[in-house]
Image (cartoon, rainbow, N blue to C red; front, top):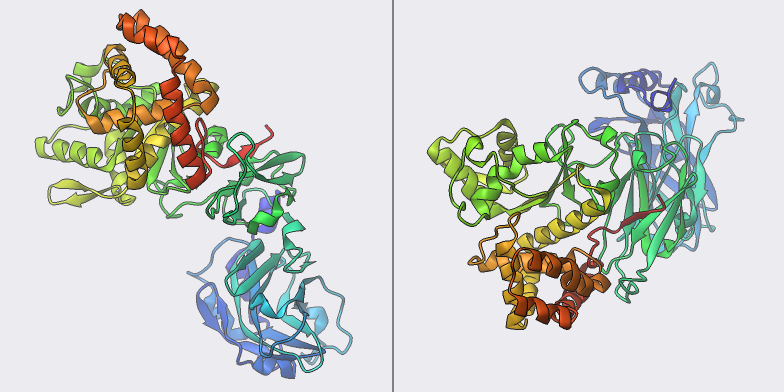
Length: 575
């Protein structure tokens, strides 16, 4: 049997176990099973009220037969965890709490607890300080184990008191998290032990078809430099991966199939002081805003999307992502350019191509024309395109209609009478047909467009830098955009010009900007009949004006988001 099948059991099966409750009085501690309330039984005095007292005490809770009514329509095939919430009642010094499961071996023939219970796996949080706040302690329910209930144990100084506030069955999510007024730790059914101070150094099991969310803390004191950016590193089997630190908090999610070993443990090995938690969702291979919708984009870091295995795509021809740090920016990755064209080619001519803009062209009319190898469009342009198609009853293709539905579902555009209005967000696209180095370049280029579309402060910064440029540099670039046949930008569109200016500067690392403009760009400029005087000026100055502008934009992106030229993701790996 596969590890995934070993981990999974149905809620129906669990309810059968819950129905085999033992004798005991009712407990006042609330119990919730996946959104359904049920009553717990108390097998000890401490369990009746949930009150725990030092130096040590243990509460035995049993499941009630009434829980059986939760079977049927509520059944779900997911691994579950039991989680209890504990609050200290009086200020105490360090204390500890533990959680364990009760089975049939813990009860005698009369249904009462045995005086000498069997040894059991326990999940424990130790050395809890008085300032740790609420404690959330969990443990994965072992499948097919005949669970009858659970125990909560407390140990602390004489006179210390704590209260079991509630218990619940939830989809299994192991790991730890520190937040405002709480500390959480949830373990596998094998148990384990951490303290609030040591959790970041612990190893956590990562089953196949699971995903790990890393909670990166803010770094107000700096994150290094773009070339030597501070990092958080994790090991998983023989694989090492991690995230570059950022000035602001982030919570990237890593699917197990991105890593080299999907069944081992995960552990922070460097920079762990800069994380506020690590949670492994056992029933979720990735995050989507709407798990029930096959069109819902997968939240992911752009650096991870480039390494995302096509075998893990939900469709063979394309996958749709949402940038985890800018969720309104949707990222399409297509199997080839032909697929990408079916989604975006008509859009390209309608939105950007000089001499073509503003009209819906038939497939036959643009069949021999080149669109782009990568794409980007803001909400306003998308709304205008689909409104025009609706007004003219233009026959859009299957992929374009699907694109429209995704944009509406994600709020990028919204239905407005017979047409569409701009919502919030943008789309960008790259293709697997591009070679590896171009995929990295295109991802950076297009994602910086995405930020430009959704962030007015960034647009203002770009406008400031653009306005400071030597007129010769702008004339060179605008001429380049005009004479290169595959581009064909409408240079009268100032918004477009500023946006493309920024993206051409930020698509590669800062130290390559001068070489790129004085070398690659200038060479193409000459080849297509560009002005020799402008070409000579750029080459003779080694594109210093472009390098200066790129330096200003790099400083802004790094200081605000921890991003840099040529890189829009925080994720890295040793692949």
